[in-house]
Length: 179
Image: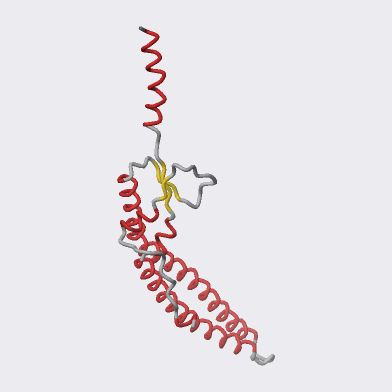
C-alpha cells in the first residue's frame, strides 16, 4: 500500500511540476515604440525645439566669428590692454557658446524624457496586461536572449493590438531638410 502511494506521488509530482512551470514571453519594445503615433509626435516636438536651439547657436557662432575676425584685424601697433580686452571678449563668447550647447543638450534630453514618460508608461501597461492575459510569469525584451525555446511566447503583436496599433511600423516622417 505504501509503495503504491509513493509510486503515485512519484508519477504525479513531475506532472505537477510541469503544470506549475513558469511561462515566458518576449516583446520587442522598439518595434512597438516605432509603430506608435505618440512617439512620432514626440520626435517632431523635439526636432522643433532642436531647430530653435540650432538657430540661436548659429547667431552666437556668427557673433563669435565677427569678434574673432575683428581681433585678428587689430593693427600690430594697437596697445596691449586693448588687445587683451578683445581677446577676453572672444574667450567669453566661446565660453558662452559652450555653456549654451550644454544647456541646450540637457534641456532637449529633459524634454525628451518628459514627453516619452507617458508613452513608456502606456507600453509598459500594455505589456503587463498582455502578460497577465496570457498567464505569463516573465516577459523579456526579445533583443536580449541568446537562446529562446519553443515554449516562449512572442507577445509583440498582442501588445501592438492592445495599444490600437495595426500593421507594421509606419515609415519615418520625412523632414523638409531631408528632401
